[in-house]
Length: 435
Image 1 (cartoon, rainbow, N blue to C red):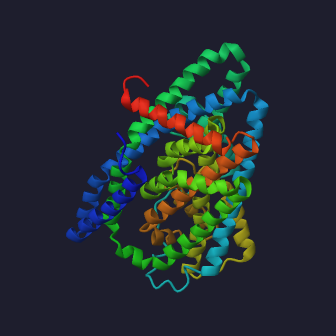
Image 2 (image 1 turned 120 degrees about the vertical axis):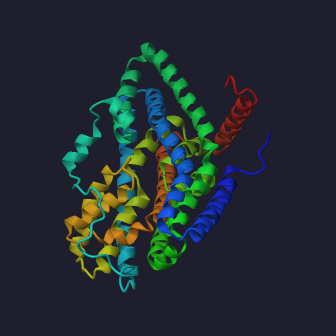
Image 3 (image 1 turned 135 degrees about the vertical axis):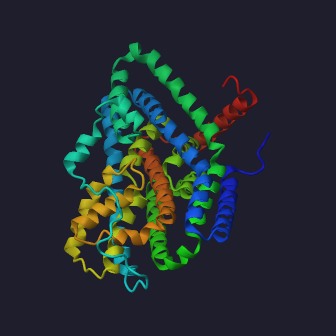
């Protein structure tokens, strides 16, 4: 039986219904405490959905990555792909940070704000321990694979999986049985993902409703200039990423954007790029990226390539400095950019990690941390844009690395692959017991 509406349409409808439902709660319950309590119950659905996604991410990354590396064959191939992906990620991060810096200086979103400023002594109550290179490097390597899995530390899972995959490939014939077993595990995880994704529209509706129920839509008017400036900057970043994709992939990059629209909307509505991970893997399969590349580059991207979050870091720090009328020289801004380049790499898997990184940066440059309280109210709305941008950036990065490696199917081959995937999906729907 064919579904009449694609899931992207259901997600869009769910967003609109969620906003309407949330606004109704906001109007009916003017008491903030009651609204927060009701929003808490509404958000149960989105919380469960995100927990289900988090439950899948560790085993999914491990199984797909190990199989991908085992199929690459040798450590040299792994090193080459790792190097190319890292080069792209570092460049994209730098471009995102610089663009955020330029736009904040040009638009001056914090000047003449017209809003009461939080008292300089106030605290946003965020852990702001300074990230150091030593912390980052020691955090890279897991003390225990079980601990990395339990805490959903994607970067640590990637490191272990790389060792595991290379060792498995080196075993040759002896390792084939285990490779086949882990390959089966990856198929099971993708099958569970398919079930979980059916809940996406409900989760989107709950996430939007809970956010609007607490904050209302008036908060968007108060921060219209700041949010407008930030989203304008994000549009420019999207344009830059698509242009980079166009340089390497040609007009085919637009096909990729069409394929990731569901993932884009899902990460936007839930303000979580993790929620879109399985959808992006599927979109990349359909685009023609071989799984051994996508299963390797994507988890790395979730640790190193958070383009939207990067831009937000420089943009928000300068916004707060401007709000308190603190002038930062060009030299100071460049120093801040370089520090953010390093510290932001430790923020994968930390909830609202951008705020933690911004808080640490504010402390370092003697800008009142209280300024964070200014943007806390609208942070969820901004997080939507950041998460969606991260999804776009990682998709394009993976496709480009696949092209560099000669592991991107031609358009005809990709079309045949889509047909095979759809046939398999239809068969498993017809016979759910045995896929």
